[in-house]
Image (cartoon, rainbow, N blue to C red; front, side, top):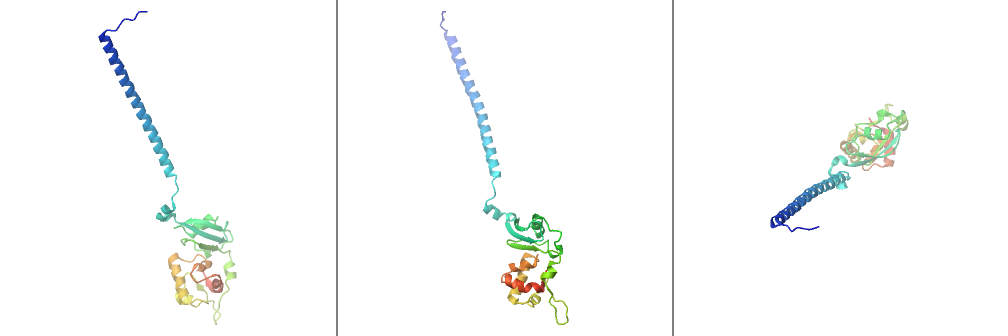
Length: 210
């Protein structure tokens, strides 16, 4: 087979065609390369956003968001599942009782204020029907009339009529009630500064909740 030499014109056309083909190849490569790069960048961005959204709030974030402040509340007595529960600031007694499975059929519903807002380390005791009356013997005056101090409505003067309660403790009880709302149970009185278990045992016979 014989090869005929190309003329100068044919050589020039071949060179131009080759250069054009190279330019087209480079443009196609760059175009598809940019598309792939954009897709990879978008995929990485989606993964990052998904990871970021699934991250739990740090303790600092939770402290900044007051609605996420955690409270630990102890629930005992006539509820389906007594125990210690983690709650959120702003929730009320009714919320933690529902979390504990609700009250039992024997619960003395009228003895518990369900509207009280929860606070950390709060103790809630739900008595059974008749339990409050049996555990709180009535104090009587000389005329035989019953004299019970109503914890959620008592004045400082009335509180000072209780054994072991002077002006300082009476003021502390009133201050606690104003800060945390009405007492949800008599046992909550032990959350007041200066009133321990022994003091409470002495006071209990002369107190009723509402």
